Image (cartoon, rainbow, N blue to C red):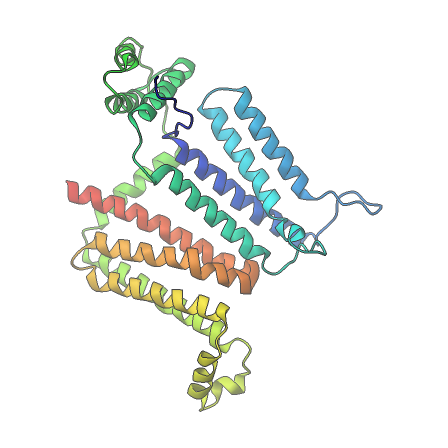
Length: 352
């Protein structure tokens, strides 16, 4: 009996899942912003209210129909974006479905939405990073690439990717040799003109490689993360210890005593913001101390510091501050993207 394979992972799924998450997050932000500036209008009338959750359901249904009806990577991208927008419209109304009075403005709703996106992200990484891909998965992904070649032609980039998949497949499988031979009989098509985003990315990579060797660049990195650490620690300490105090209390010479009193009576939410912030600051400090020895090590410490902030601290800030905490989240995500870019570029520099 041959082994049956039921769940074959798509090696290109990261792109589609990233599109899904981005579309979902953006849809939540857009709908919240729109409702805020328009005074939370209601569709329909006469005691009826058409919730935008219904539109989200229709969009998710449309994405499923598209996936089941059509072939090709373009279809998958379209379905991912439509499904993400639909899911964002759906999850935005979570407050109505966890409260007895259907309260859209339920205070923990924003934190629940945030945690949901984090769990989705972690679930995606578990599926696609939890174990090595099997030879059968590489073969099936090579077949997917051949399907795309039949639909849109084969350029050099796709040919190399397909060959890489076939090299990792089981050589005893007769399909491997047949697909490899087919690759050399398919007429090559010229590569498509890079998108504007790809050209911008190439320019940024060239700029980084040209300035990364200067000492001023390293000084700028140190100054940025030192300032970031101080601002974040000051913000969290203010949120935990000073919000609710009057100006005369803050200016009181016995402030240290009040500080110690608050520390003793700190709530769970306070500790949940304070402890991860201290850990994040320690990781940043480790990176600052080691940046002269190893930029990659320092950048990884900075990355872990940002991840602690995103996955732990920010959750409870969302609970307390609602969607005004989005500015901090945006900043952390931008820094995280920049750090991962710099880590990759430093790996390229060391490989030269």
